[in-house]
Image 1: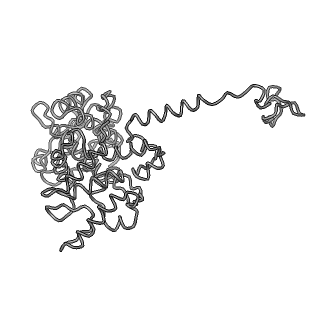
Image 2: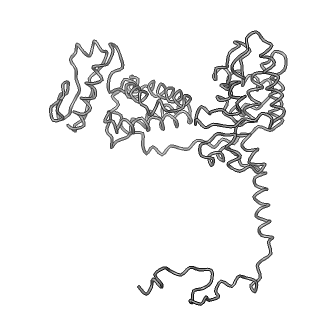
Amino acid sequence: MASDEKPINAKFRKGRWFWEPSAKIRLQKGIKGRALGADQVQAWAMARKLNQELLTLADGGKSPGTVAWLFEQFFATEKFTGLAKSTQTDYRWLAKRINKVLMANRLLADFNAMAIKARHADVIIDQIKAESGHSTSHYCARFARRVWKWAGRKEFVNRADNPFSGMELKGLPERDQLWTPEQVATLIAKAYEPGQKPSIGLASHIAYSFAHRMGDVLTLTWTALDSGIRKTSKTGVKLPMVPSAYPDLETAIAAERQRQKDSSTPSTHVIVCEMTGRPWHPDVFSHHFRQLANAAEIPSELQARDLRATAMTEMNDGGGDIIDMSTHSGHKDPRMALRYARRTPEQFQRAAAKRQANKAKPAVAEDTAPQNEAKTASGTPSGTREHPLGNPKKL
């Protein structure tokens, strides 16, 4: 269809454009008409996109142009499918959380995405914050802002009006929890007591020693461990693994290898759930980790993810540089490893010692300073280079 020809289902009433398929089609497909605004170019472009979606929409599917439909379009892009699996899961959860917001006794999922304005976005995020807390509302706002930015480029919404931009979100509090070596040892020892789950202890031991994400620990295979290299799930970085660098961990891994060999159903994975004989599901693991931590009287604010940050902090305290730290953390940019290192008294003392050592250096005597001002035969001070064109001020 030519771009200057009015698309089907586009109707103009009272100075505004609307997308209105016939009543029969709306009933069959389970969709509603959509307001497209007063701008004819944008309205016609959106109408054509909605018509195209209508051709492929199954009966009873998500109505084109709605918030729920917009999220589904984003989830079908290469931008989304190229993200780490954990990020994809998080984004889908955030979309569901946004979709179930109630506005005027209607789910936000059914609202026209083009009709969402900045004032609506403020209400949406404030409602999520009141119901689910600051952290959830913060991530919902950031996710929605990304989707609307993408949708604007695709002309699904008004590109110049992203309702979730400029919200001046209050930053999340910086996490500073650290495990002590005694707390880590207590947790691991508790896991090996009768009636407990040693697999949680071994997973915690690996996460603490290697500074790996717990999700990567739960998917670690014997093949990868024996090769000495594994690829991280989030960044795709190949990381070295040398259990012998941590003798206690090497002993624990050897014991688990032998246990699996002696069992009737050895696994391809290092960490195996005692209840199923299969790798742990992350959500189930988190629940049982907390139960074990409570039994070991570990403070509730300490979480499994803090084992990774604790390991990075200990490496930094020990004088490890960003390259050393990145061999464990797996960040593409080694500088990112420093974000995981909590500020500690040891770091303060090391910085102070360097400062004091520098102040204690003897001052250079004036008569022993290099004679940089001595003239050369050409009249140029020694230690400097003559301009290739002579004195530029004379040009």
